[in-house]
Amino acid sequence: MIVTFDIIILVFLVIAAIISLSVKDLLAAAMIFGIYGFLICLLWAEMGAVDVAFTEATVGAGVSTVLIVATILNTRRKSTD
Amino acid sequence: MKAKIFASIAVAITGAVLLYAVTDFPRFGDPRSPANAGIGGGSPSASLYYIENTYRDTKVPNLVTAILADYRGYDTMFETVVILTAGMSIFAILRVLRRDDASGAPDPAPASSDPSIDGDHHRIIVGTTCRIAAPLIQIFALYVVAHGHHSPGGGFQGGVMLGASFILIALSGSLRDTLVRFGEQQYLRLAFIGILIYAGFGFLPLWVGRNFLDYGALSGLLMTSGEEMARSHSMLGVEIGVAMTVMSIMFAIFANLSTRGRLRGGL
Image 1 (tube, helix red, strand yellow):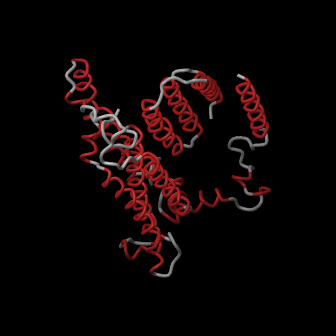
Image 2 (spheres, helix red, strand yellow):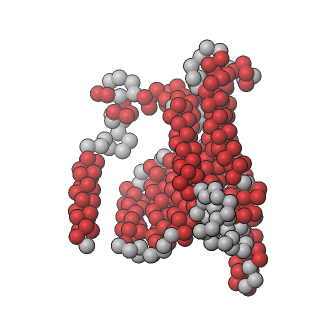
Image 3 (cartoon, one colour):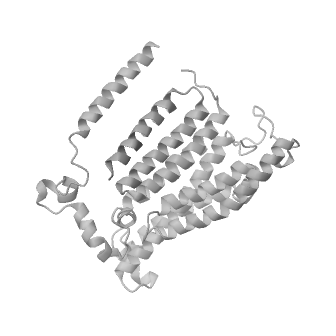
């Protein structure tokens, strides 16, 4: 556990979370949510939970982003609020 | 606007409460924390038991896989059932089974007959790259499933990667061509076969009077040298079952979501 690395990842994590919530374009929000997933994956790998990091990389960052994008392309792309 | 302010206040309060709760956590890697040393630091803890006994009991070096597939096999089985239930829910909500679909748009032309030059370039570069990448992804996924005992990985991760390779082919080429090879009947069948494999490994020990999911009883059936190796091999079996279910359901969810349940056209 390296504290500097932790702090860098956590700062990027918060930035990614805020941006993906505030962006009006839902496709961009989905992509930034994928980045959020990869950052969490990095955090877990860095803490030694490699199995969980692997699951997060495949499910959280990979497939769920694709599923969200598929849903957005079949609904509306712009957020209303 | 008013609702947004209230929501922000609620989120801020919840976040503050969660952050306050975090201060009660033991320090990262603290040897005297309840998880590592048992309650009060006296009684032996669960994690200590697993660290000391897992390799002796199961001959599996990766503790996480051993705990998930063997010691807590019951949980993992029903987690797989949860995945299956998610797939069935998507099927029940989205799937349009009417043959003459009057309300829907007509089936758009597949990407291969796209006359525009842009579409052609897109098809050649992206399609060829993904066609080359997909078998490599699948081989790596099979390695992840089979090697989950010794390195990070296992049925869930490998299954998701297998499903993602099918999704990649469907995204880069056309969903129609993918469904010809891996159609609805096949993936639904595979999803249930995966659960049946897992439950079969659970029920087989009952025949010889042992507990549900007690893989050690299978040493005679699997012709292994001892109960430890039987548990190791049975873990591989249940991981394969999990991988089959997860792969099928991931592709099923994508196919239903991207076509609004018609399984025609695609993105």
